[in-house]
Amino acid sequence: MKKQSEGATGLTFGVSAYLIWGSFPLIITAASFANPFEVVVWRVVFGFLFAALLVTLTRTWAQTVELVKSPKKLGWVAVASLFIFINWSVYVVAVATGNVLETSLGYFINPLITVLFAVVFLKEKLRKGQWVALGIGFAAVVILTFDYGRPPWIALALAISFGTYSLAKNRVGGKIRALQSFTIESGIVLPFALIQLWIVSMFTPIMIFSGVFEASVLISFGILTAIPLILFGAAASRVKLSTIGFIQYLTPILQFSVGYFILEEPMPPVRWIGFALVWLSLVVLTTDALRRRKPDLPIAVQGLG
Image 1 (cartoon, rainbow, N blue to C red):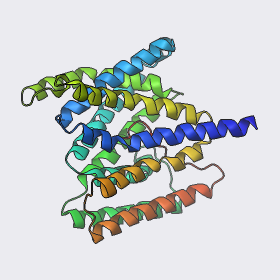
Image 2 (tube, rainbow, N blue to C red; image 1 turned 30 degrees about the vertical axis):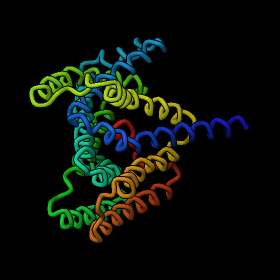
Image 3 (cartoon, one colour; image 1 turned 90 degrees about the vertical axis):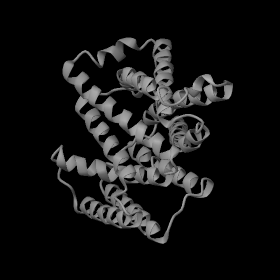
Image 4 (tube, rainbow, N blue to C red; image 1 turned 180 degrees about the horizontal axis):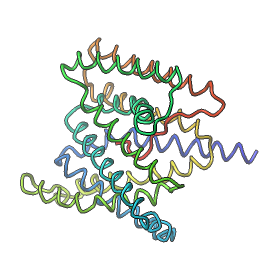
């Protein structure tokens, strides 16, 4: 009974985390008064400050600092930090410029990119189902390139940057708690974010000082960057990894729903076909994973918007 209760609690935490990540387009849209690059800066600043506060309250600075004692590990953490910063920047700018549907596409194809990276960089051997999924995914990109009149750069940039981030985290190795990892990573990119703020200030007003509403939205976005990580960590310790692998699709589904139903972004017939092929490839990938005794669905966390 206790085990079932733990599982239900973990599932609630996991669903909540991915729902918050999926709601980010609405928050970024609410911050449309600010330059998107300024939004990214305050996300880093207040995300770091909130995470540092939590690390202080939980007295886990020793474990956090341990993460960067090894020069090799610090190097890979720095690489991860760079690519998650790129991921966040592309995501915020894309949403701010009315490309929410393409951002959702990026997170739909992320598991496919993760599998591709496993082959190219980790020299893993793929099963037949995984190759079929990759083939369908490639066909989808070709069709979407025809539809957009260009490759889906936003989706590819999001998927590749997060895939590289995940690869770097894999190289770090060991069991790293999400909160400690986020604190170090956001701390590493903090100086670059402040330089970005200085550059932005030369072209547009800094909106966080414009009023209570503006400050509240920008500060909240930073804090909301850290909260899902805590929920995800609590979920991961209570439910099976395969369950997390399934509920991760809530985020791009919600992003797609926001873009299509709320923001009313266009979806021509050819684009529907491209998205449908991506979804089919994920069904093939998931089915292949379920046929194994230990499902190995790629897990997406922290790069989500």
